[in-house]
Image (cartoon, rainbow, N blue to C red; front, side):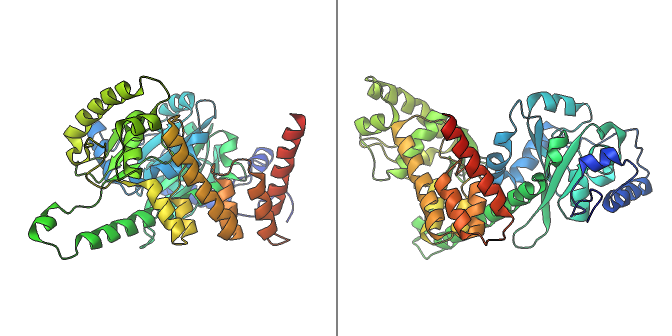
Length: 431
């Protein structure tokens, strides 16, 4: 294949598009034709704002992608900071944007074309764009600059992939990265496809967990026990700076401060209970730890009293009288059962990564080490390569070498791994 052609029709070729403006990919040309057939105006961009603020909040809370946002955050959003020049958008099956995150300055620019939360970006509304065309064709795709149907979007490039229900395979949403030419780099589409696969796996994990909880709740019990049996509340702390309390009977998840998430995490882990001194020692280093702990527990009880009263900690020792399922527990449980791929998908990042509480740091290291050991010991080459592509194994030379040993000699993935090992060695030599 010559003349700068790309091997896949789904990939953009920015360099070729600049050098040979007369060439248009067939997929793009067909999308333009659909757009013209819908009488869209290439000089006017009018995406519909489908929701007001309250409707958007309710729609997001009920959407199947809401519970797996930590996976997307870990794989995409954490790298799209205020200086990244990149936006990450998540939409529903109709192309309506539900979450937009990333570079703050770029978000303000994108508001000029109504690329905002609540706006409709289906192909039927705005013409050719990565999120809309990905949904239209049910396939990941890159759209570069002037390939967009609407001229107001020509300064932008984007890569998007549809997300499917893991059981029915129906489209449930779309994930998109938008920015400059880097948004259609050659590695962008494989990264987005891997993210969608991880999201779908996590949805399945959560669904299986809910089925198991319902089966447990349905076992024969006395009338009193049956009335008090509920799906176990959960606390999401992996890949998050704060805690998210779910399944606790409230109409929507409850976000907890980092300190309150630390306390509940430690009590959920040490289910037998902790003395005041023991809990304070796991949270603080200071001499006044016990006094600080008492004040913090008063605030935590006030927060939980209004949203999750069954989780208000008891005293002497401090303990939870209602079991609280940590997402970290789920990862370890999956590893114990040999479900390594599901465990990796369920691990969006370190446990409360910014916490310096000694007990939380220890738990964070335990979970990360257990996952790493499982990957090194039992993972296939493909799974180990997926592990490397996450932030769970940053510059881990041992893992890189292990993956090289497992990959076939002619695997195209080997070159990237070798280059990464050489770069790490060069940095170490320079230091």
